[in-house]
Each structure stands twice: as structure tokens, then as C-alpha cells.
Image (cartoon, rainbow, N blue to C red; front, side, top):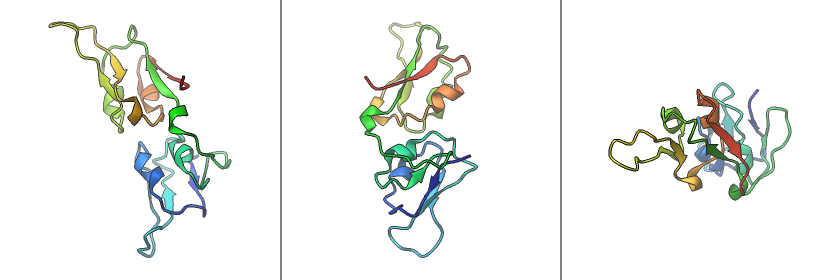
Length: 144
């Protein structure tokens, strides 16, 4: 089940800009500036980014409950266990916001590198990194 956009949508584009899987597009119709947006249910990964950013309460979750906006500073962020991480880069490659990177080596030949949240302000809290980590080195943590 996917998230859904209702008639309260004003076409502000906030949800479409942050959707990590590009599941939100403008509804087909007249070329009006503030056309309502829709969510492609086949692409939606139920991350909730759209519902947290929408200021118009125009988005309902997969259970049909209207989402309320949450300040971005309160969104969960990935916490990566450096001792477990193998630096495979799957999470880095899958992060469409560019919030993750592999740590730089501390010295020439250093192989003890790991994924890290290098740009926390870019993180949408979608948890795709956690869900794609093959060794469960990532957990989502509440903002502190």
C-alpha cells in the first residue's frame, strides 16, 4: 500500500522534491501552475517523507491516516555502526539525497573505512539505506 495525496494539495512541489524514489509527479491535466500531485503506488516505498514535509496535510499514509508535518530537525537519521559496516557503498549509492559517504582513510593503505552520515542536513530520513544494508549496520535514530 502506498501513500496518497488528497484534494488539499496546492502543488507546492515540496513532496516531489524530497521523494527519494521519485514516486511523486504532477497530475495530468491542464497546465495550471499549482496542479495537484499524485503518488505512483508502484514506486512508493512507504518512507513517509512526503507526509512529514507537507504543510497542507494533503497526504495520507498507507493506512489512510492523514499525515501531519514534522519539523525537519526532528526527522530520524541513520546511525551507522562503523565496527559492523563493510563499506560496500550500497547505502551511499542508494541515497538519492547525497547524505551518505564512505569515510576517508586516516592514512595511506587504511582499509578501516565505513559509511557515514556526511551531510545530515540533506538526509530525508527515508531509511532506504537501512533497508538495503545487507549486514544490518544501519539503524534509524531519533534526532537528539
